[in-house]
Length: 146
Length: 139
Length: 299
Image 1: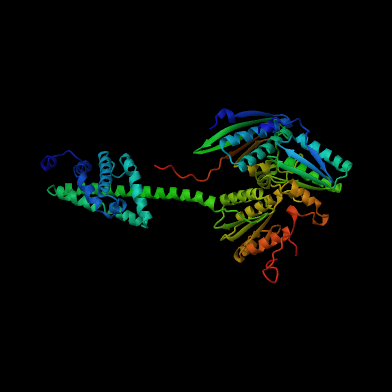
Image 2: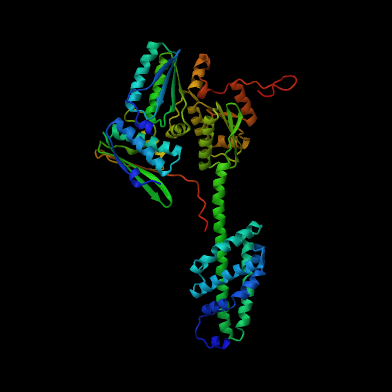
């Protein structure tokens, strides 16, 4: 088992070195929670995309990592926040092929496909917060024998 | 993972020359700047060493995001302008699944199961250069 | 005894039933042991059947004591729930439908009712009716509890089997050095497609396979979601340096795909698994020749 302190973290996103720490911490947390290899990879990749957005478009910010529980399920919630210029047109930013910087335009829209839940809060001039959650997928468990 | 924590300084990507081919081995978690540096260095090396093929072995890479994906695609495009063919070798299943889900299928990029298969691919005549991932059904 | 009871303004009918059950515990259990339900389940010894019967009578008395004859969640049933579930499950395994099991449970009531009636026959008709009604309600609730338990056992079984199916339904076969195949049988849903994709791609690495064949001969229908998963698998295999061939697209499925406007244009397909294997062998440069005359068997 794991302790919450091994998973919970608040990581700064200020440089591309920080991106490496973000990826490593998310990988470790996902592994502790019992995510399978493919789901770990998806979540780490999503974290990498979103952290880079925070760095490049938001001018830096931070990532909060929290374990979440719902019913019997465990999951990991990642909250990326920055105080940058914000996103003027969310709809467009989420569509594939949209890019405001370098990259292949897969940033937000691509990351959304890699996680189970995805929320963005942003307004022009007031920064951006992206909150994503993924759940450990377990095949349906046989009920405990009574 | 510990291995990744104690990685050497940014900018250290082993590049090995084997005959006409450059073998680039990527490992662990790459800094963005390392990847960009590699992209620049490779162009110069291709010209100065006069190689005709580049093999990028990514079997040791745990994640490829859109940034690294773009770097790989651009290396291949640059090499192609310099008359060298590029093969990306050894992508892990989890990485491949994630890239596809992300929407990055990297069409046009030659791929091989591992470095050895990539070398064999590059030894074939140019006509069959689309072997690997890109072959289409022949009439 | 009867005198003492008759005078009683004491009990509600429910409590009378409770007292009756406690008094006649042994007799009821003995009679039940002869009923098909108990006989069929406890084949080894009659004593065991009697003991099981007593446990059920005790549970009924406890529920009556709590005045909850209509409540299938009554605490009194907790103790016998497992036993009832085991009995129902064993009858279902013997091939009985849930209705038949329920009927067998219903047949436990008449013997008890008969006992009760004969014991209270001197009582006013109204009191007697109230008692038999309470008993009948109680027995009905018992039936509900048993059927509930049987159904939830069934659900647990289905869950377990679903899990097993996911695991066994994706065998990867090595057809040749460098060629693996997954013959898919049955309906592909999102979860299973995911498992198929991962299994196939892992096999590509483990077996060092240049070619992977996905045979969908046994897949009854392909909707756009499944087709999307197939395309994703093909794309992921490509990124890894392997080529994925889809074989066994039946005419009906081909038609559906065209109707859905799905473009498998970039995907390599073959009519049958044999054709796909032939294609892969050819690509690997393997020549297959026939026996005597040396003519090629397959392209």
